Amino acid sequence: MEPRLEWQRGVITAIRPETPRAKTLTIRVPDWMRHRAGQHYDVRLTAEDGYQAQRSYSVASPPERTGLIELTVERLEDGEVSPYLCDVAMPGDELEVRGPIGGYFVWEARTTRPLLLVGGGSGVVPLMAMIRHRSAAGSHVPARLLYSARAPEEIIYRPELDRLGMTDPAIQVVYTFTRMTPPGWPGYARRIDAQMLREVSAPLGQGALAYVCGPTLLVEAVADALVGLGWPPVSVLTERFGPTGSTS
Amino acid sequence: MDANTQPTEGDMTASLMMDGNAVAGLLMEIFGRDMTIAESECDGCGADHMMGELRAYVHAPGVVLRCPDCGQVALRIVASGSFYWLDARGAAYLRLARQ
View 1 (spheres, one colour):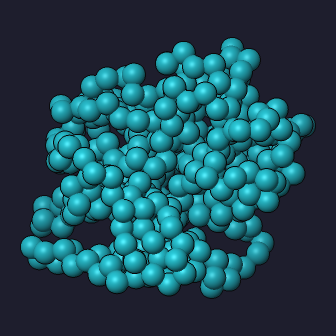
View 2 (view 1 turned 45 degrees about the vertical axis):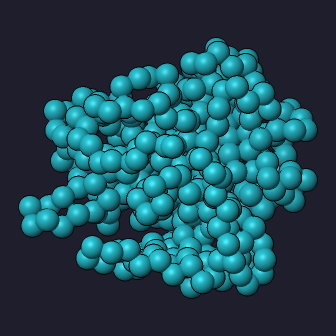
């Protein structure tokens, strides 16, 4: 039997800005349970009048970091939860959380298949948990991260991703910018399409496993394109969220 | 969405759509276990999908899960007072691992 999922009071121990719109909250969880990379936690806020709002956020930290979770939260203008988490919450505050949740969009480091990760915007968060889990567990499976963002300053985890691309020859990080490109940018500057996916995934060869996470339209386009390129649909795992959505 | 193209109504609906992973917590509340890897068969077209793959519409006073292939409503869930209401007539079956 799985342990029953209960709400518990976590404590925020640190808040780190990632981009102008996204912050990472480190939360100490009293009844911490080892999560799987890609799983999420629900966060619940209760107003003084008893009104409750809850959202689901992917865990960014790897399971090897015990006792705590990191949630990266993108601030949505009309959100009910993310503005509080990004603007009001402070280290030392308590936060109601429950998790880990979800067994579908998960990756285990013992998997030996090459790995294609495709993320749009804050869809990179569960993929980052997979990348960190891969490193922490000492996995050397070939991996590619294709990360679509509107502009360079919106890349979450950029220093860590750039460092990773330089220190681990088995992993390659590829960015594409859809709105604004730095001067002289030699890389991709368009939305993800079939040609880009073919170029990025070609070195992985046959038998790779793809994880795609981001806004619904991006996920649909990427999953369709991969299947069009000959990927078996069962090898393409997806997680979608809407613009005011409950995942990130 | 490009800044210079007008979204169509279909795009707007599509952009509000999520998937079953987003309601994994609610499903776990009801079923007491992870349901994203439970298989459901669409009563309309017969397609089998993990519940994490179903399309989820959560911007309503309840949750609607639809078949990704044909769009038929598989499950509707409303939490009201002390009860959950779960209408699963669009699912031919749910298949859960024994534990």
